[in-house]
Image (cartoon, rainbow, N blue to C red; front, side):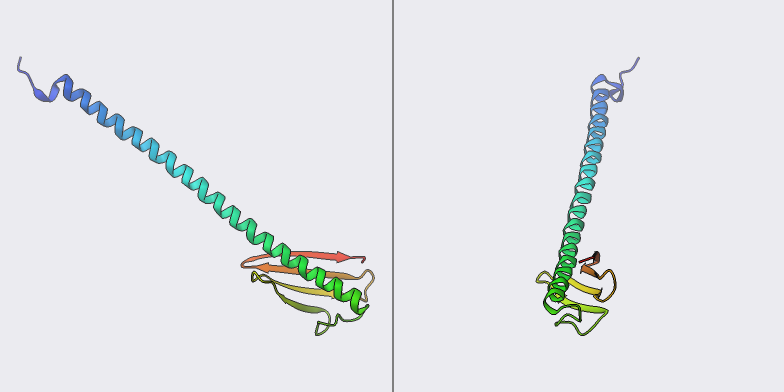
Length: 129
């Protein structure tokens, strides 16, 4: 019986070690990619929440401005508006905008304020004030 170096126990163990190492590296890579995917998703969600919050603040600012103008100017057109039913009030310092539509003579009176920041829109409606 001839001795074959390719079938020696040492070479066989080295082959198993290589396969085991490659398998463990593949598992580690899969875990790393999974964690990176979760982290990227969480970052996107946090950014969406921040944009949504900015839009809500803008909508609130528009509603507050319309209420302030209503109480200051009576039941007619607010002084800083060009006229009903739509009154774009302006832009906040962060670039968010708001616009307000209202009817101060209806029963009940109402104000609708829409805030926008980037691609996010949030709105409030106030009645019976």
